Length: 169
Image (cartoon, rainbow, N blue to C red; front, top):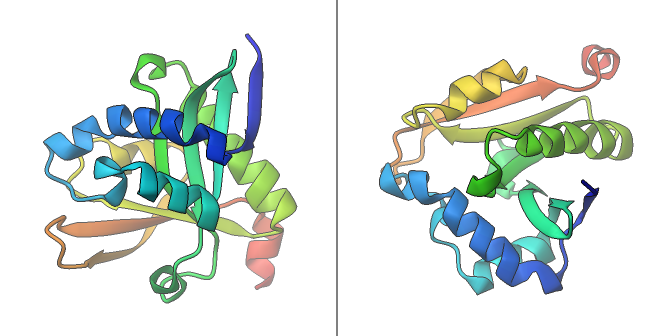
């Protein structure tokens, strides 16, 4: 099985949209209003144009994706890089591909390339398995807010990827 970690390109838009919509089906069923859950070609194109969208490709097929993004509203909460739009092809769930991509981004991109001390992400508290899943992966809650978009509390989580740098700040 050949695995490739890389930045998404404009040639990936249709495949990324397909993976996203299938991966985010449970989010739609829960009534959580994340933009990725109802993505379209324009939104996927904007995501890969304006942010760093990383993919894990297995045997020539994209099986997982996540984005490292900068948003003005996130900068009010944390100075650390922010992960969003994390999706795993449902046919590959439970095979560790999402964990491998997340670990690769945390170490290779966030810690080593960006030289950041920690990484952050956010999800809806009412989602039944996402907050506990991130906590099992070493993320800790540090902030909660209701943005008034009908999602209830959004939980912000942080994972330290360079303890020495984190303690020095």
